[in-house]
Image 1 (cartoon, helix red, strand yellow):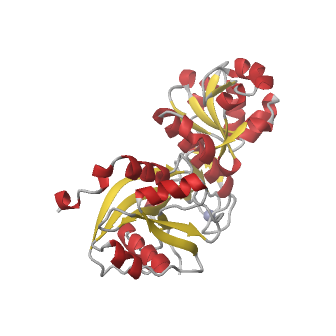
Image 2 (cartoon, helix red, strand yellow):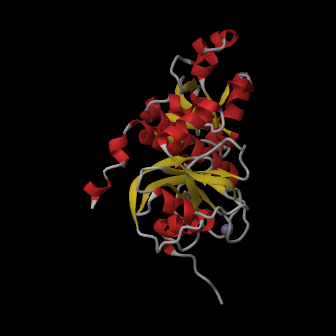
Image 3 (spheres, rainbow, N blue to C red):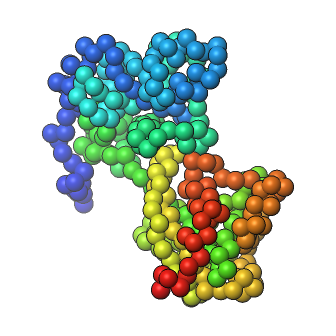
Length: 330
Ligand SMILES: [Zn+2]
């Protein structure tokens, strides 16, 4: 039986690149670029500037805290080689994502200029972080999506870095995002459930989280993960509230944040949880004071500052009203 590809994935008129744009871009002496690298790394002049020996490089490439400038020729070279993407603006003000290893090599920059997103991403303002998220997500996608998942053909980058096509079956592939949920679970006394994953160092405690599986709603994921990891069933009286989302481009997640308020006293909550010893080393409810004491003593370390979990825990610690007026939200 002959199968036909869905119309949405097939468009034989899809241009390889905007040639008019590339012709203008190649003439530009300076193009603004975010340099993204493997495993969530990016070039950060700000970090480099802190190292005295590299102050010269910083002056050479600009004094912004995230962007660098490269020649239009190099930018077009990367796009033609199937790496990099235009992010925004006309050619004269183009902001690009470019692959850090290739560009740093071409410019003679040291690899030590790469910073790790999970450790330093918090330093950017919202606009810069948005650009960085896109650059890292596109880098990971361009590196990982090399072959057509339908026929195995080698994919080719098109649309200035935002899509790939399969020359064998005309399939179009766009960057994908994986939904995942993260949830703060509370009892009636406002305590917060934190878990230590068996694969983490023993002091790292965070909120429960997990990827959405095929065919699941995110709410189903929340209850499935809570059931699997700490044995709390959806039959338990509770209020589930969606809070917001966070891009986590390592390599391509979108974290959807929730808060779950259990209608259980502290004593009932402690009795109901059954920690899955395969996935977790430990999980328990903390009062604010218990958490602060545990951090102070070194028994518990805080999550990365750029994470949803860090912001959630910080809000929980600093603003009691945010989490305690259960009765007002009925
Ligand atoms: Zn194909």
